[in-house]
Amino acid sequence: MKALLFLICLTGFCLAGYFLFNELMYGYHSSHLIYVLLLAILLCNSILGMLITYPGELFKKRRSLKLAPVKK
Image (cartoon, rainbow, N blue to C red):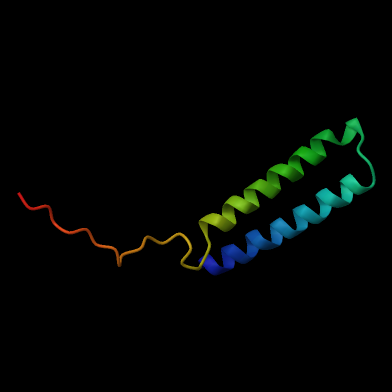
């Protein structure tokens, strides 16, 4: 389930990036401010979704490191 959500976030990231850079390539007008801001919010949301649902072991805690008990 997380892998599917990761693919959806990755697709949204690619599409938002494509439309954002495509819009900025043709020029920037003040009337397009809301459109560009919404694309930037979608881009940030996709990045956050990918970080949350990353299927690898990038964000897992290392369990191999164990602390020794403190002796009194």
